[in-house]
Structure formats: structure tokens, C-alpha cells
Amino acid sequence: MGHEPPVIAADARRGLTRAQRARRLANLLNLSTPVGLAVARAGGARRRPGPYGLVLAEGYRFRFPVAGAFTVGDVIVTAGTFDALLRRHPGLLVHEERHSRQYALSLGLPYLTLYTLAMAWSVVRTGDRASGNVFERDAGLRAGGYAERPVRPLAASLRAAVARVRLTPPG
Ligand SMILES: [Zn+2]
Image (cartoon, rainbow, N blue to C red; front, top):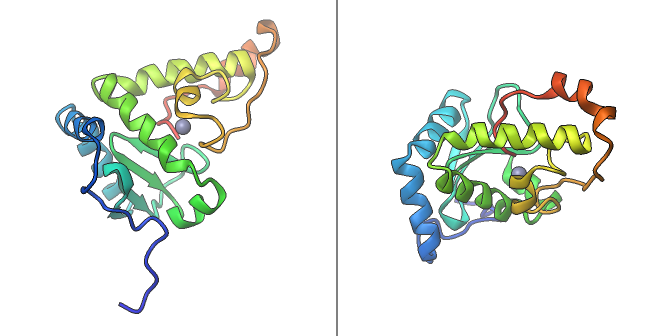
């Protein structure tokens, strides 16, 4: 209605691959998508259908766990807008869809624990949350807007790492 279609106006449900349909069903049944929807609702985020069967939630008002966006089940949440994020990181939704798939493969919410352990390992080995995190590497560091940092000596970072690690949804 007199307003530009979003950059990612994609087909919400049509044209999904079999893997994407399976992911959607898995994340519904394992409750990660319902939890993601509840998180988005609690944060006052506006929801709209996105590509790959994802749900995009924008304008989340609480303090943000990560820079750009975070993923819970099939729900991708940002404090800003996806149009703005995708201008900076065009591959972002491909990246976040990989996280949704990781939820499905981890049977839902246990993924948050696995992700946190992988993030802790990454912080210890590289000094940042993503570079050595198997889940971020699988999702694609560059697409997620992460710069790759080299592995560093263990002793150098252990203390700092312990202070930085906490339960954080993947972004
Ligand atoms: Zn990520």
C-alpha cells in the first residue's frame, strides 16, 4: 500500500526445499521455534515471514545479546531491521538459516548449551566468540559478519575467556 516491498519479500512457504520443510517441522516439534516466537513477542518485535521458511522479527527492544541478529529455532531476531542488516551482510539469512538447521540437528533447545560451549572454546582459542566456534564456522563466518581471528596460545587468554562466557543465543 504505497510502501516499498521489503528487500527480502520472499516467498514465505512456497518453494521450500525438503530439508527446509523438515527443519521447520523439527523446530516446531522440539519447541525451539515456539520459544523463539515467545522471545520475539516478549521483546515487542514485529514479525514477518522471511526466506527459507524463517520468521523475521524486527525492533526487539531488550538489551541485545549479539551485534546484529540472533536465532532461536526458525525465528531470527534483530533490534533493527533486516533490510538494514542485509545491506551490510547480504549473506546473513543464509547464515542464520544454518543456525536454524543446527537447532533441528541438536533436537532444539539443547543447542543453546552446545553453542555456548562452542563459543567458550572459541573465546579461549581465538579471543572472540565466532572464529573458533564450530557452529559459526559451519554457518559461515563471513556471511555472519564475523572476521576470522587466528588461534592463539591457550595460556594467554584463559582468564579473560572465563569472564566473557555466558549463555548467549547464536547470532
Ligand atoms: Zn552465527
